[in-house]
Image 1: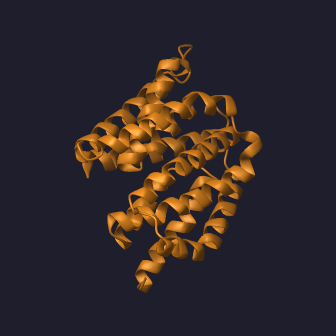
Image 2: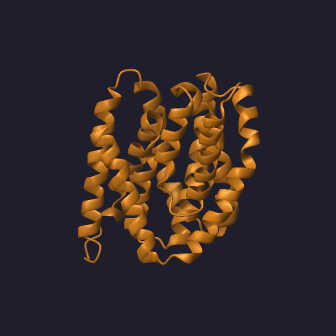
Length: 243
């Protein structure tokens, strides 16, 4: 695979941001997706990006494994798996543009409700029906638009998880989710020996980004953490609504 210096730069930056995002506030996934789209066609970018994210997830899980809320994970992942399978079967028949705009609206609505009710006694996000809807939505979103992150981020935030538990649970969730998606991606011909070989060269960059992400998370308090999560979610929502 012949690569220009510009494409190598995009790959380097994508690998670094993937690692940094997974061990800190997250929300940079949309930038990584856009960088990969600039470097490659849609099929190749997905094939290169998924193993990259799995490596970043694995590093984050190793560091935050004791902070993961496994009870929450056991509740939400089965519905996410159903969403992934559903997304796989409907992706050819669903208008992606309509789906992304709907997803953008849902993200903004969840942000508004969560922010409005943050200091009130009503806790709608504790409801199991909401958990099922978020799980299904995240599964479909990750298959159709690589956009499960904002839905999960807002949901975990509204459950009141502290920043380490938030990152630990999110990391384990996405490691399992991305491993679950792996056979589908291989079956579709997205991941090949050539793309995996390219991935190997950027593993050290992912690790450096992940290490710096851990350091960054330690430096910020919970208030700043929440603000950054919400800001990143708004950016993703606006991207889906306007572009």
